[in-house]
Image 1 (cartoon, rainbow, N blue to C red):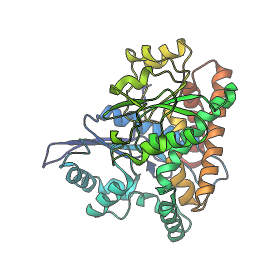
Image 2: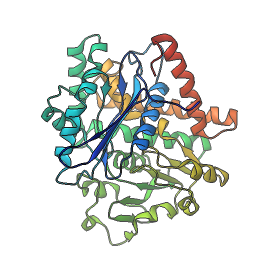
Image 3: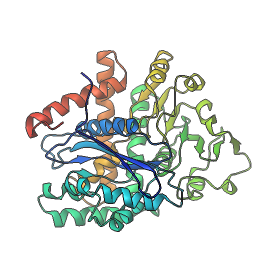
Image 4: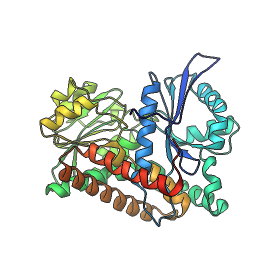
Length: 393
């Protein structure tokens, strides 16, 4: 029987005609969690798939005895270029229209095309208290919890907000866990990253610092490569607000190639960290990497994943590897961790490594892909959550 979300709606902006969507896949204890993205071409089907993925990401982090009890999954999406002069007005009007849902049962935050600062500012303009106010009634001590999260968001590591780093820490640790299981040393392992925004940039930084060699990065302006390794810190420092790198920061040996060249770069790990549906049945033929680590949501289409598996390329699925940011919010808010960067990184690394190990062990035992294994684990935990807290579709 096809899965049916609890709520699906589409909104049309009366000023510009841009459309936005909200899909609530399910509620747990009356609340759902899932970010808000803005990109030209965003569709209802895309948002529905992302919402379903959020239900699984939440469930995969279910640990009996922890303060954080996973929420349901949801997602918002707006079909508008975030660089457009119209974008902020569209965003504010979308949030005004979604106010009853944000106040009641949809907690949200940054996603593709939107930073948390932009979301927070638009929330205020729309007359909302917070992007996560729907979860406040579930907190034991709302005042302390909100202060703890605010303190965590105020933390900076090497000049970068902790909230911008923790997701990439989880993606990087997922990749490192896969390398460890395969007995592959970090030093000399080559990485190509598509997208150098919040998630891709942080992932590149953590992998670079672990000793891997980042040999290619792609942004909206094209792909930059260097087989001897790029200067990741210099590239990150030269990014604009949308993750595009100022080419003046490149070194003489760095080469500029077309935007899709990251697919065929000689690398061991590919990290798609930008748009959904980046790897399809056609362009997957160019990939020679052993692993694809899904820092973005839904970057590998199903037929492409099947063909890649036949050729020996393993996809580490988004529902596992990019779940760290969402989980960190809730670990902090509910009090499983304090507003401390070292504790946040350690907790994230341990949680993601455990999930990757569980997923790969299940995949090997069942003879299935890691995605199928992760989905099976998620379904088992969703069933347990439903038994304990009620079933809300």
